[in-house]
Length: 554
Image 1 (cartoon, rainbow, N blue to C red):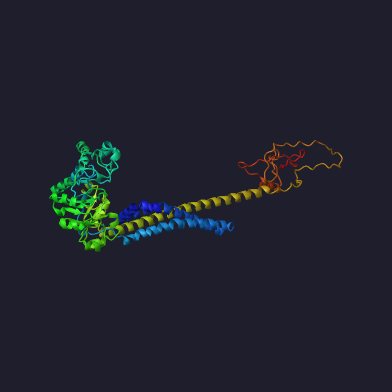
Image 2: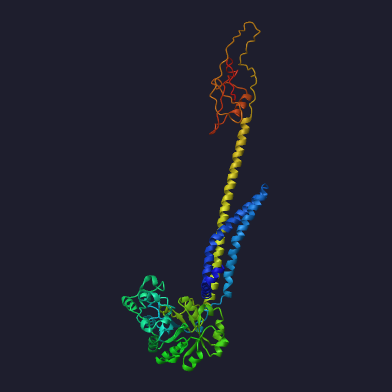
């Protein structure tokens, strides 16, 4: 984390600045996102609540495994808290966070300052090779307020425009003098520097300085291909003609340079010789400032991010600072001291909008062709409109979230009712089925009474007594028992009486026999019920010679 904070320090600072201007829109977007997230959150919270209630009922009605059920219930509650509590805390913070938002772009329209001026950083480096006359001309064409550059002094005292320490990146010195390619730019004579090509590199795709550059026309490509290193005098001539401000960084020559101690005087002399109006020069170098004020009192002295006391003592009313440092180091104090501020390097529209809303005087940019098209700052909003949007969105989002939770609760309640009704019907059916089975089992387990000896009626012939004379005893062999194949054995044994053909004839049977037959008359066999084997036994009254038929269970 320390490494990230160290190497990404500028990115973290830029991210913090983006929140200053984007905070109202992030707030409104976050509320919308929370409304969308409320659907799954409500679904799971309500579902887990119903499950927790179900488990609580089971704990009340069933005392077994109470510890395990309590553990599951506790887990459900923990999950509900882990998801629901952060959701509602974030939602509450989003509802009240505008009370702590102070964005520069939240102000009344009449309080908005003028549009900041645009200094072309090395010209217009997206439209032409940097620090070439083509680049500066493109910046002027796109309405630049001023021109920014970097100045070196050649070995023979000629100030020229170059940004890098050496000439490898922006010239073709590797083709002409590769052995001297690492030499500092100060140590070359102007006669040699004027022969180098300073624009061909710009047309090579792998050397493009920006990813989002516009495609050049054929005429611009041809013009860029022939660019040379310009002198400071060439830039001053263009600035005088177009009445543009000029600000530049002046690089100190090395120790062995012939103009090591006099390069300031050399540059001031070139500026004064160009006849440019002195107030168009923003003098940024801090070296020999006293001499410069004496030699050219019309130059506008520009300082760095010095304390206000130092700026006041040196009579400096303009500062040129990095935007990341200024916004975190007392912007209000410098504005209160009536200090004119120029920020560098501002390329993004949102950052330019932040500078505009903060009443910054000017910015240095690589993207002059885009920023010139902005007529109002992005993300600008009046406090009244933001408050109306905030309250409206809070009310609408609250209604939506409550409706979503109610819908999920209602749906879970309906599902629970359907489940309860289904379970009740199933319980009723199970009870009825058990009752029918128990009744049928009781009926099947009732054993019929054994048949009694029939009383002799007037029409019933008396059996001859074996002791009387004339009685004849006839011994017959018993009729064999007819058995059916053995089916699956039933759970309960019973005896079924099957009437024979002779018994079905109209004869007068005793009353107890009719009652017994009515009681034991079998029902229609149900599906999947085993059938029981029977044994026919003839009744002694109808068939005295046959053996009675009795249905026995296996």
